[in-house]
Amino acid sequence: MRHTSRQAAWPFALLVVVVGVAAGACSGSAASGLGPLEADGGSIDGAPAGSGAGGDPGADGEGHGADGRDASAGDAAARDATAGDAQADGSVQDATADTGGNADGPPTRVACTNKLGQALSAVHGRLDGILVSVVQPASGGSCNADPDHLHLQVRVAGSVYDVAVTIRSNQPGDELFLAKDAPLPSAWSEGWHPEDALDYTAAPLAVHATDFASMTPADLVKRLDAELATANHVAIYATGYGPDGAHLVHRLGLGVDGAIVVDPLGPTPHYLLLHFLDQAF
Figure 1 (cartoon, rainbow, N blue to C red):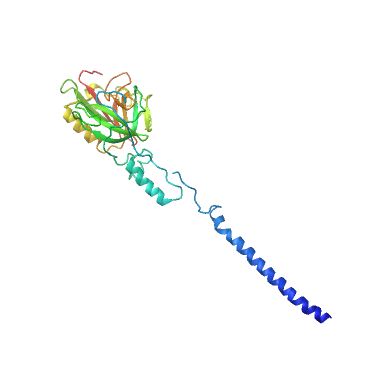
Figure 2: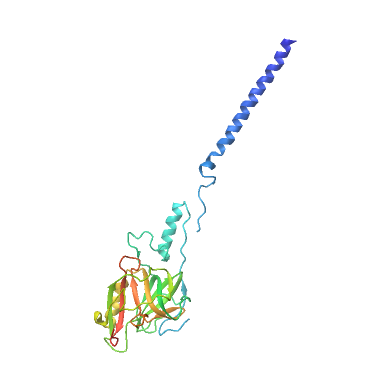
């Protein structure tokens, strides 16, 4: 009887051992299956998803530019593609990317538009944006072109605004010009800033009428074109003529002087100043 009992017990013991080994193998497989998820911090892909008409003498209309886009985190290819798009659309946030050490970045130029933004107020202020078009003086042209102004189109927050710069007055030889390097009173910040005052005779400029040189309208246009040829970011002191543009980019006095500032992000912003012969200051 004892012999029969041992034979029956041996297969049972072997079965217990086999089952135990199999259970251990399954347990080990399940544990190793968590490894990759834990290595990625509990995320399957290891990275979160990204986020991506007023009336001026010779200036009017409305337009929109492409919006900048955010690159997705942890995705180098998406970052590279987005940086390329940003340079193409000239958005403020991305225009300084990969500038080779130049804070201003390469110039952004597109065809001028008759469609303009609607966010300016009819007061003096400073327009901080990207220079996208320079419209030459002309009679009866598009984009507000007229014989007496050089029109600048500046993109701000996806919309384009017109800035009419007087290059011809009622008297020949009446235009006077000065370029001067000086700091911005407040840091460049994309938008329209009606609280920003400017007076040629006060800091940071501290200039007077005798510092300027007389120019013909043709020479003044050439000089402005040369100064603006590589401009990307600009800060323009002017007075809004309506929601879509500004003018009076010259000496007026009493803290409401106009000026064009190129390279406003650099260590030495460059002011382009204008006044007329009958102005003494």
